[in-house]
Image (cartoon, rainbow, N blue to C red; front, side, top):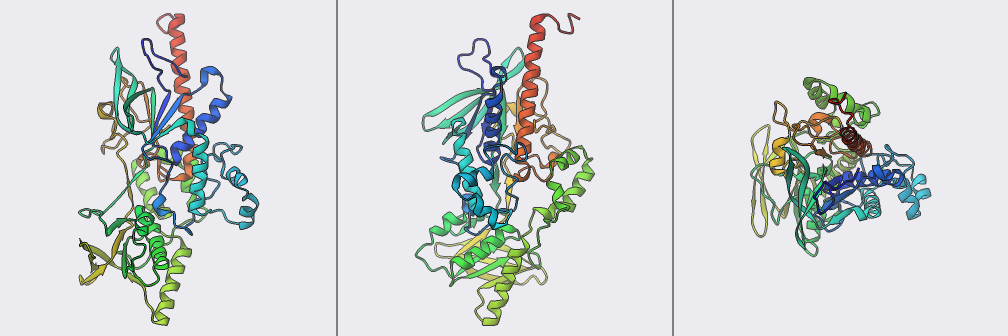
Length: 450
């Protein structure tokens, strides 16, 4: 597939990846496995750029006892290629823990272990990625009125360098979401930075934390801070009566199946909305039932012993936050009575989720070629390629930001291996069709000749 356009001084990559989180690591692995078996004409040239200095995935939430909420079989490769040497089981074998993991009798590894697996996999395709390189812009290269390839400007310690690509795959992940009007500060955190910021408190004796949110991360934060600071009071604030359990039952989990993506994509818009309403409790603002039970037992035990450090301010919301150098004043308002409770805390942690980055934010005028639906959302084809006008001959693929078209697995690990396989197939299909079209014109056997 790789080729150089006439007059070009440098080759045009078949694919440039923006970001190198788990999704694009999986993409690099799929390309590497393909190239190992491909003939010279089907080799895909790829380069990935990651602004972080090394691989890292939600490092601030790698709490030592937190487990994955997805089966280890939904790793970077297994659902696409069960024989891959990049599977979690191969990782365990390389670490000498395969038998011990089997004896563990658990489908859900520690999150810190799965992160180590990601690092292990990323290192094996390290020749495809440039760390410490930030993509700062994309511009079209126009020839005869059509965009033949894209100019990708990358910033690093060496300055700005322009790379060329016929396709992009954007995997820039999610952005921490704070409530409107609330800014992060020394004592106002988002849970994504929890572990790094907690280390800054070493040697101090915090007396109170306030944790805002009702999802898995919020509950994990409460449990972790309660354990880490045995003299501190931990106040959990949420608008419900209690944490809602995640529905991980076998039938409900079919929403994460690869086949469910086909069904969701083909469904009418009103059915899409209903499916998300029905099954949002498999992923959004829900907590593992074991953790819910542990927190409740801890709260009750403290009530019995008269040593209450866990406080749950339910059916309430945080209505004001004022930070000072020494403390942060949080105001909690009851949704029932309107009564306000002021809390002076050392830190307020917002476990208020994430929002997808604008998938077209880096594309500049290239975004003008991308089509949108009636609601202003990016139109995305089944192969995760952004729908564009005919003048843009390049493929722009999204790994994330496709929930409105592909369903709940858009930014989740559950379907990563299958998704990158579908993107790879699309690249090959479009590349081979393009090459076949070029041969047809050269041979004089196009439709005009017939």
